[in-house]
Image (cartoon, rainbow, N blue to C red; front, side, top):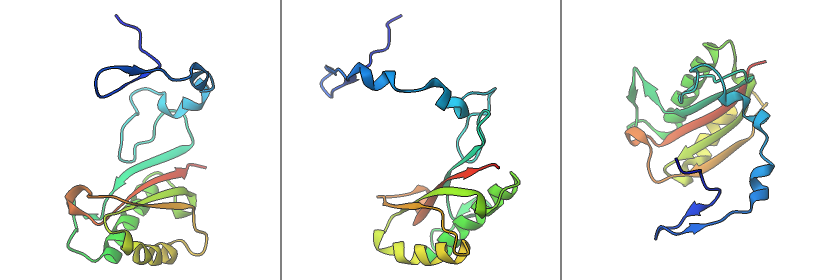
Length: 151
């Protein structure tokens, strides 16, 4: 079996070597949330022994249907409703949210999303990043990725 390389492949099949020091600084202890017995998965499943909760791909859904025909404000509200439900199932609230990445298909809509965001967090806003994307599943206009603390 071939040993994995610390380099990366170029489009033509060649490789580019990376500085080995970069890999020496990675701590195996910092990966504790990835360890565990079969708990690793996307879409809101807690992994390993970490006190962090990761929620990916929170879409504006109702009963499993993406509500892409709704306004961007309504979609943002639906995403936050789903987030609250996911947090509640883990005995957490919006107050436990540490960071949110908001993905929008129309970057000009970020003002409307921010308005909904401010109304839901009662003045204690967790940091967020808004990213413009080309498309989202189900033709949604907004999607959330969230990190929360289970304290």
